[in-house]
Image 1 (cartoon, rainbow, N blue to C red):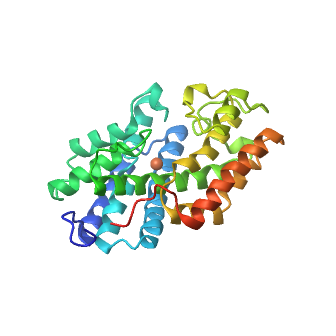
Image 2: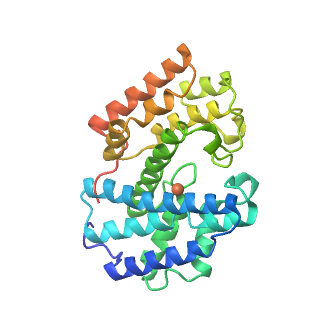
Length: 278
Ligand SMILES: [Fe+2]
């Protein structure tokens, strides 16, 4: 399946799509500094996710064609964000609409992927629509599951990068949108600590403070799929950087060490559920 699969993205397809991406994003540039800041934030994020998906994909020994396919998914995974922010002034899907599905609509309306064959186009659109779901539907094809999980890993890798550095910037340079408008109070909710400790699902609506959100981010380690991604998270110290911005507390320490243990184990042996190479 590796190099003989029917999905095809050529070097020139990729170059044309990159050009389309930058033209499309520039059409959302605005004199309003709040809009501009958030558009550029997502533009840079999309480009970094391209780098990350290549980093992971190379370590998974993907073919050149499959690396290009993965890169197109990364490039467009957040394409719905630009219209979302411009129209609703928020990145909160609950207050606006699902940005994965909005992205699929944008790519269909703009006929962005029409130069690719239908199977390839459908695969890319599915991976985009699954990137922000709670999980990837298990009844999808193995190829679709493989790429969707790869995209989710690359996206999270950059989210870890973004947040682990973001919490160290001066308060005046912070961006309320990134923080989901949560108050930066010194508290952590007991409910959130218990849920993270017990590996329970946390809903965005349960978050009461920025610290709650940091704990939720640490628990995203449980949603990582591929061994190279675990290794990069560990090597880059993302988990520790987030933990160090939380208050000193035994309960938080317990949670941190538990998640760290999982991270170390998976970076050494891979996740139990890791998919075999395609
Ligand atoms: Fe993203």
